[in-house]
Image (cartoon, rainbow, N blue to C red):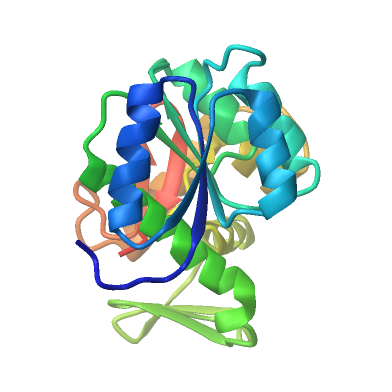
Length: 234
């Protein structure tokens, strides 16, 4: 049992009663306040009524596809949404992540993995709450980014990045721990939909060569195969 009783509220939208009950019990033991819903309609009602901190969302709901519910939630809320679904195909993951999901966990899953992903979402809440507001530098192990001077340092030595490489790095750091799809990166960096993901891969390969000490086992810039990239959270 986790002794860090943080009073976070988690909404579980899951039509499988066994899975919902299992998650409820496990997270309650970890100190969370858990709400459960078996349908999209009930989930939207509970979300609007209680404004939970984090949502765990199944995609195969009886009254509406979970991706459609995610779209509706994203219209008015930035609360972290972790998709927990039996749909394991890459296109399903990409669709959910493109729609604004923070993470995607495929059933069956280990509860330890789920709670670890929830902790990542909690850290994003802390950042959004202003804990890092006004910071002028970012440091993680041997990597330092000086936002004011627009400098990137590796072991204290300045590394030259192209303007696009720098923008991609800042985007990944700002979403630390979150998987960013190729389409999302293209949209944020170049401003249009459906670009060539090969360009993203080229820039990421260049960033790894410049920032990582081992490009085969990167410390910072991680690949989610077939989906996109994320900046390591730990």
